[in-house]
Image (cartoon, rainbow, N blue to C red; front, side, top):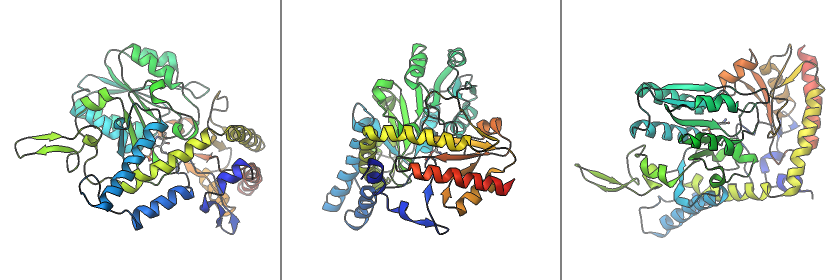
Length: 408
Ligand code: PMP
């Protein structure tokens, strides 16, 4: 069995059919599928270990707590964090960014007249929380453009990092362009001016080995569901310095040390940021999910496979007349391809492709400012995972050509 077949065999959903055709799942940037190891633990958390965590002394609670904390430790190891105390579980990338933005306001780290810098290629999750934060205090948002190759314009970025800037929030990999930003270099540029950096790793964490200490960033955030785990669990990595100095986000159970009506003290980091009952199953499932991701990222055969898939996908896309691939000149990209086709509406193409078994994304893909600049009607996006095959990509080329000939 090849490495891809071996990986693929662990995802039961990939053997189902859609409209009588074999499913080719190409919407992985929206959410990935889950392997047996994750599905099995997800079920065991319900039928074996279901209890609330951190609060009781009974066996089930101890088991659930241990599994949830094991998930935290696995995430810390996976991203090279200093310790598991640098890992806050949230409900996803969106929640992690909202947490940091709100705590910047509440803690007085963002004030009237200050600025937040983001790039043009951000997902709505890394735009709107900062707009809300800026509106609350009377700060402003500065947006740095991207170059033709899809990476952020480093000269313009450096120029935008003025003394008023209190945080740079930037994507590791854009969910539209698929282009990998040089985040270590970007962090260095910001840090040279004393500006903290938050990296949106929702797409980057899936396809690149991340070492947060080597990058040097202050915050790195991602979602479990894009990296083999269930929905509703996400990660906020923060340096000890920042997690200690930020105030709590939400108040409630589990995030407290001592509560009186007059005065409350808070739990230690990271529980200070995990008010209420967490997504216990999701947290536990992060362990098998990131262990699976790690084994794929370390597999040389899979790196070669990504390269082959990229070549095949580009050939297939190039065979469609009038097709424009976003950031076609990218130096480094993940297997994510957003494109427009002259005379073809993306929704119509995606609907026809679905009938042929292909799951693709269409529209603005939660990055409206960027997509608007590339197209008036939205785009189509095919995003691959290590379980996608060359055969699927070739079959996709045929299906796309057929769909286009039907729609023109
Ligand atoms: N940032 C990027 C780059 C993304 O691709 C996504 C998901 N499409 C998000 C943020 C938001 O992730 P979630 O919806 O899981 O919070």
